[in-house]
Length: 385
Ligand SMILES: Nc1ncnc2c1ncn2[C@@H]1O[C@H](COP(=O)(O)OP(=O)(O)OP(=O)(O)O)[C@@H](O)[C@H]1O
Ligand SMILES: [Mg+2]
Image (tube, rainbow, N blue to C red; front, side):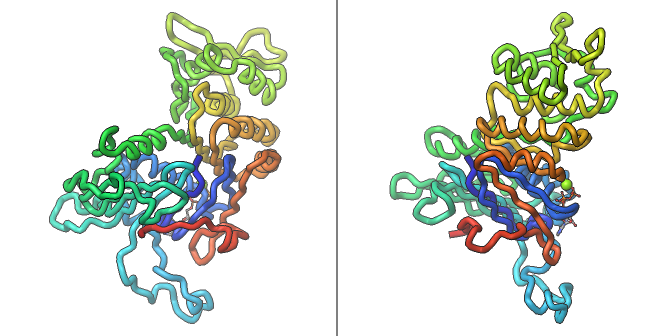
């Protein structure tokens, strides 16, 4: 389980350190930085899959994602005595992302390229990466240290150089994770790769989930939902079929689902109260289809270690929100969950779950802060030793 999430200089998240519970709800007004929390977690996952540089490019490049405010927000700025624009940075700022978990912690530090001659000068450079054991980075608990292209691992009491040539655009998790020299890198990479992110399931009329698709065993539905029928059939065959039926009936009283198999092509059918025939996926409303995606994502027979949901309530009628809260609460028994949401009703339902942590984000001088969080409640965190 993740115990701390730390983000620095990512958009409005100038310095955000969150203590995580097994169920975490992130709320806040428009523009308070909720989606940025979601995206920064996804960037961490991209790092473990060797895609962080291209993911940042997809967001408009590192420059655009870096905190655009001053290095320090002084009291004079807050009081309006000094203009915010008047302050020049003493040193370039870097994007830093990290987490600590029950077992290992990881951080990555990305900065602007130092090679102005290359055609890829706009690519960010990975300046540092660290893996450690324990709640935050300390020299004594450090296991792997990357500085620039040099990667060292701790072997007993000694530090051993693993590589002196890791490209600045590649995470060490991609290049060097091997079971002999750096088993902790491999463990961490696999841990991060198992995280699941659900943001935009496609429900438009051309959405692949609305048409029969070749079905294969699918223990976690993909992020656009194209394999919905296969994911539901997998739950029916090797997962908790009763819990699946209960989740459907909880949201749509009297309804049940079935997966039709047309020569290997699977199609979702939904039996609804009062209708003489089941409706095909192509005939379901956007909200109903979206809710079925959420059921499939949250009832996986191989629950992910971490599930991150961005605004799962989108396009759902408020009457469905309490059932959504129950669905998420039940899934939190098997996976750690982070939900970013606007809606107050699922939050009310989620508060009933033990070990539910709520963070309300707010903007303070352009910077995202957690409302009501005191300095002492912030977990300890160090970006360097
Ligand atoms: N480079 C940057 N530096 C500082 N702030 C930034 C930067 N880029 C974007 N922002 C601000 O960060 C915030 C990003 O908000 P985000 O999209 O995470 O909000 P949200 O809470 O998800 O809002 P919504 O409820 O509207 O989806 C916006 O207020 C935006 O103005
Ligand atoms: Mg948002």
